[in-house]
Image 1: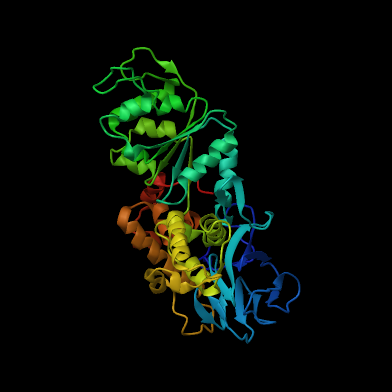
Image 2 (image 1 turned 180 degrees about the horizontal axis):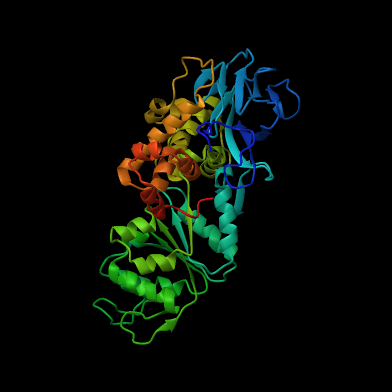
Length: 457
């Protein structure tokens, strides 16, 4: 791939294997959603536009903006609209679009997303009640569906609040297993009682054991055992868990006879298992047994198209089923937020807005915490040209990759934190000069990826 291959949006892209991909603009606002496939030479967007370009949100002009093809780029241009065209919070006259960009026309908010060319229009799925998989989780959902019916152990890797327990619930729901989903927060197990609580105990096995205990492992018999915060398990407990995985049996504390157990284990970790092994926090043999399938959950800031659906869900749940509408500028700021706490933070912010909204029919951006205003790009200066040339985009991405890699030395993790794909990271490092800037030899590049997330779709 040449240096001209950048994250700038292309109509058709074959970077991810042989399957071509196309781009969509997913619209949200005032409780309505629509989608626009971006594969035509020119698309006019507005209230008076024809076909898929028709946009009915308040504040949208009859012919508001257009998206046209210019070589490998897609260019959005304002058509003299009354209220302006905004991309990533900045008013523009003309700009090149990129995957993940947030577009605002009046009260209509759109997010640019890429999918395989043969796939259906991106949408939100609810694989089990109360659990939503937005367009940005389509790859994760596809993997979950494939592994759910198997007996393979699964490891879910992702930042706090990315929904690891919700994904475990979906895996269990789709597995067809008759037993329960038994969730265990390994970090909350008392060190002195962790073995007894996990594997059970006989009456009198230790001081205070006034009756026998079943334990989480046997409670999950016939179902799924979800181990959250796996890294907090003590070494002695890890050794006994390894035996459960190997022999499919458990020996309760104080007993001499092992009991058979049938379960599927799903584990969750903030830190990749390979990194835990390297630091001595996780047994290598246990990590090997657990890693049947590793699924990496992307942070919310990397799947902006999921925010509207999740926001609507939380508004319904916490408003008693009568959610207020959202002002377009409020939704824009929420789409552009970094969300360090991910979905958990989004839910808390939603509850805060409802609490301070005084039952108003429309929530406005003044209800957001002050940190949101500081994180939103300035809207003062209009952009008149495509924002980045291919060479500029490549240098910007390489610099972000270098900064993130310098912090922890893991290429896959650095790529995710820099907001680029692992495949693009490899393309950026194709030349010796680029690898030297990252202080990464070809051997180190290969080994650094071992700590990544092979389950990412």
